[in-house]
Image (cartoon, rainbow, N blue to C red; front, side):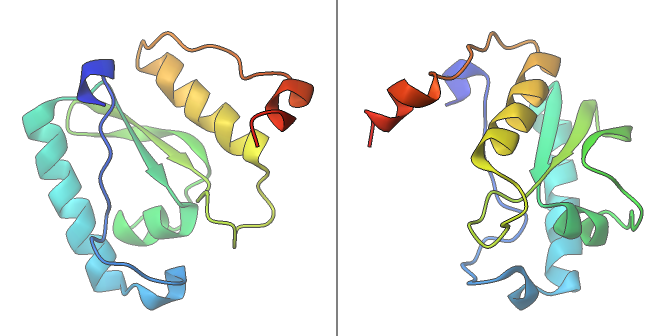
Length: 123
């Protein structure tokens, strides 16, 4: 994915069935590691998936989804809902729209998704 200008990492590099299994210390350590990666790689945008994880990891208890006022190193910082199926209040289209907005902010060319009828044929 780096050839497309996209990189993916985890704040916490271990599996968990639910966000509640991840400790605040693990999230804070992940935020420090992510800041080091951003300083080295110098992305245009860093998107964090999971508002609750972001609030804890970055000590921003009142953060809202979307672009943030602060940066992470040189990168604009975005917070998006966690795409987990356990996050029932955010629809797949909401996730796609948030990721698309962050990609556009990063200067990537994005295309609209297929119409719902066409998407059914992909299953």
